[in-house]
Length: 169
Image (cartoon, rainbow, N blue to C red; front, top):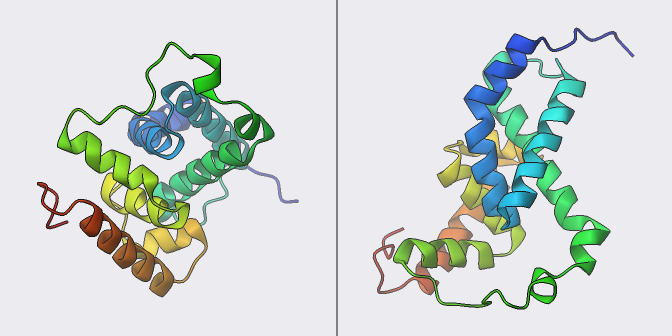
């Protein structure tokens, strides 16, 4: 294994400043839990620190950071703890299944109800402002596959949100 230059404190601070909020938003949307999302962001930064500088092209840094973040979220969703623990069972006093209070809440709810392959392309494209090529690199899928998933996700959302302010999505 080739020796890697360790990530400096200034580089990590720059990464946190530049990508931290976006990573947290992505993790919140992906995982549906703020506290779990905060843990995922921390784990992603640990992986980034350990893998530094695995990125061959500095122009692709955001895609590399988001790829690590998405993979950490996927790991969290696959974990045995996540499959066994239900927050509804742990906290029965919390209301479950309430209607969203706003149209934006409805949009988010519908996005989160999509299959994971559609949800992730919507989150990466609209919430992280990544292009199809960058999303393809993150997911390890051909650009045509990402384009098709994005198109299908939009169509599904359009059907589910008909008549609302997001009808022309």
